[in-house]
Image (tube, rainbow, N blue to C red; front, side, top):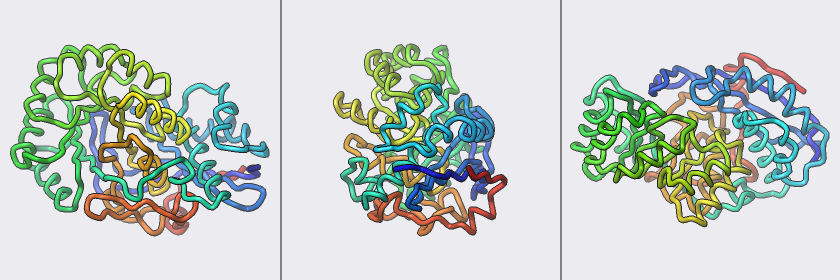
Length: 367
């Protein structure tokens, strides 16, 4: 492949409902859509999921836009690229900034799959026709409001429910859900809202038989999570702490948890996600694919990743209608009996809805 042009779109896509985490409240998903076109006129699409502010990682949308424009895209334009794995070498001089790198990596994988007349899932080595879907619920104002939200999504067919928590919106909220839904596959996501000094609060959650507690402690920590896991019967799952294959190896060596959330955007794309998945399979660690409130383009890459062996738990891949009145893809992603069908068309398997894209684009750049 030789990529000859690139287009960047800053998009503010309104959410159907505001989404609250321990880091704040979101009313829209602000992201970057990337389009890469090769010398034969074939086009691949990727998404940079960096938020408007750097509350999740050091990246934010404006910084990623500049990095893509000034460094990452110039490194690949008019270069011969045999496989997407080659991007690792091309980007070796640029540290971190994984969400910006992921936009290019997934777009190149989409292009690679289309050139080979394969679905994205097939191109990366996936082996599933459907993937299990879970849903993520933001912090609610009361346990009763949370129960109402959970009931709605259970009736919609979601197999696993993730509830965002923070101090003073944790045990009582989760217990109310567990009392109403004793058999529900229920998990909590703290987004680093706790410290090791909160051990007593976190140990209390063991009573609720949760599937896992996701990222309870600091985003850059592995040692404290290892100490915490020794004290808990509930498995710890790490998210923000796992940004690379090296992080995943350290997680295993230290015993920092028992489950891995592999987010395509957070680790730098499908290439690194595959590496972490292979390590997890080798070491019999359960995995699932996390989301970033992404549009259908990011969600298509997540669906492909979740088809890989080792993704044993329901994923944060929900129907388009969970978050958006209108997604940027057609057809939109649907849920059937708690599962999402894996597209069989070449590449990401969806067409883009350019009317929706242009309506919500706030800045565009062509290179």
